[in-house]
Image 1 (tube, rainbow, N blue to C red):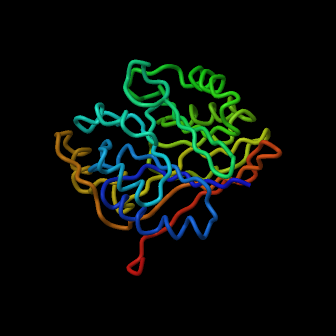
Image 2 (cartoon, rainbow, N blue to C red):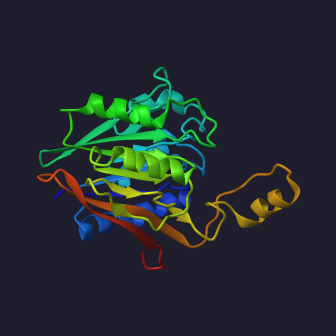
Length: 264
């Protein structure tokens, strides 16, 4: 049965480092066939660069997805098309650069991957994630044996609704963006693995990966200030999904949390 690990939003250097330190061991321990990581916060906490993407691939990540910070790093819009294993959200306008999906293959099993942005509270020009998912699934018919869908969204209700909308049609619907792992990992009745948010891979002694003090100060006085990436309590957070290719349904969906240790 194919088994994959999806790694939640990788935040800055601390997130990249724990992926590099722990992923090779996890691949062996868990018998992983595919590793997907959301890299939209991997470069200094906002966006992605080609050089940073290479560090994730060197660590053993097979595919990198992105979210609403896709264009935060200057010049990435000219780099993204060079990478065959990076995809931007599929419901951005078609004129945007980059791939709207990926297809990975191992041992004859083809896994398609795409991300859709939610539209509740996210200020980006994007197509309806429900209609976009329908369109993508129709276009991938016959090209893959299973489809992994990431919904990068703020609203829990929007993520849950998409999970139910795609139940039985996608191998997994996994949420990202809020940086807080949720406790609702499950396999829906028709066989789709679901989790509202895979959490953050980065420093948990923080406010969503940023230094605590300037964030609190911003809430108190409303004044603009920089929010540097924090350093403490670094963890790798994600979800393990196991898929029964013969039955065409997920059979396992479990949150994974790995802490960084001095010996790691």
